[in-house]
Each structure stands twice: as structure tokens, then as C-alpha cells.
Length: 305
Image (cartoon, rainbow, N blue to C red; front, side):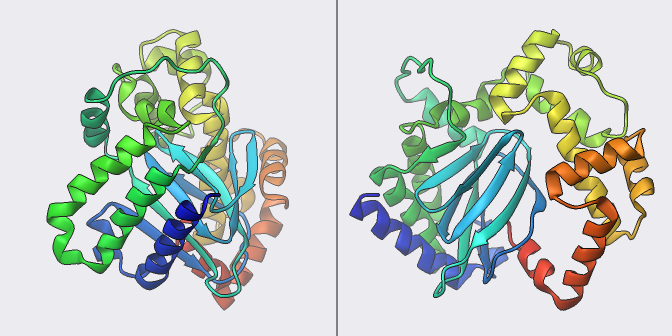
């Protein structure tokens, strides 16, 4: 990482450390800040269309079959509502783990993209993690720094937000940023909404494609491009996350939670759950409830790491 980018990310880290608890203020810029003091277990989260960065420490993110550990040298773009399983794996001794997530506004993305010249997309496969550029780090640092000058947010916020989008469109993740607005007939957003709202139904790719009025190949390709998952992988991740929530928060038994989210086989549920979270469902839920009793997992989950 070049010195200019490192300096700007240090600047972001200092602001995140100061402002992580000021949600009413950060909401004005579409930011969600996270400060965690120690490593955490895996947790399920739903990311809206957003630009997510780590500025201190390292995290593990599982998106579909993509399982990576990353830190301040990279970033992630999520173009649609995305189920992510993640954990803090390293917290800095001085600062802890610090991260920021900035919501991508489709209107702003569309306006900036329309004013930029289009380039021919690379035929190479798009990596899940993006690489910082000095102009992007500079623009994002100025956006986050507005949290220290809230009186200027109304005037400067929209201007700097457009610059951040412009700089993102100049990185290797431009196709994912554009995917926030380029699904003209909303195939992927409509499919995501159906799977989220009706996850217990016995969906197949055929029935989902019919529901969103497109062909199976089109649905499969667009869904994979936008989420790095097939529709059925996405549905499985949603179901497992919701089942874990029901066991931990609502106190449901594993079989009851599995049935509620659409699993027809307890053994199938247990196998999928263990593969993702590393423990049998009941044992995992009991362990998390124990951690909740001392506040460790609750503190980690309060931020979007």
C-alpha cells in the first residue's frame, strides 16, 4: 500500500474510533461504523448495497463459496442485499478492530455513471475483494471526516459522496458498483426480495425464474454476477442465518428453527449448519447464548463487522 493511501486510512480509523457510537450522526452520511476490541465468532449479517472497508484489524468474510481473510488493503462492494457470514479474526492492540460500511445510493451511482465515459469490461473473472487507489482513499477519508464537521454535511456530503462513487467506478470493482443500477428489469432485486420474504417455501431455480418472469439461464447468470452465489446457495445462506437467530434469540429447538425456515430434513439442516458455522446447531446456539451472558458476542454483533 502506498504511503498516501495508508495515511488516509489512518485518518479514517481515527474518526471511526471517535464516532463509532454516534449512529444518529453517521446515518446522515449513510455510514455504519464498527468498533470491536477482540476477535469474534462467525455471525450472519445482511449487507444492503454498500461499500465496506476495514481500517484496523482483519476479518473473515464468507460470501457463497468465497471465503477470505482481509484487512485494510482491500474492500468489498455488495451490489444487492447480500447474506454474509463474517468474523473478526484480528484486533489491533491499540485501536482494536475498526470498520465502516457506506450505503451505495442507486440514484447517485446512476447520475455519476451517466456522466462518465464507458470502458470495455475486462473478460477476466471479477475478484470479490477490491483494491484501494490513492484517489479513492482520499475521497473516502474526506467523506468520513465530515463526521467531525457535522455542520458541513448538508453542503459537502452530496459533493463528496459523488466523488467517492466516481473513484469507485475507476477501480477494479466498477462492474459491481454499476450492478447497483444496471439490472433494468430488476431480476435480481425481485428474486432477492422473494427469497427473503418467503424463504420457507420450496423454491427451485425453475419456480423462482417463473416468479420473476425470466429464463433460468438469465436468472442464474445475473444472480451469480451480482452476489457470487447461485439462487439456491443464497437461499441456503438466508435460511441458516435465520435459523441461527431463532435458536439464539427466540430459544427455539434446532428442529423447530429448521422447519420454520424451510428445511424438510433435520439431518440436512444439521449438515449444512455444521459446514458453515463449525458446530452442530444445538451446541452452537448454547455456546452463543453463554457468550451473550457475558456480553462478548452481543458487543461484537452490535457493530457490522
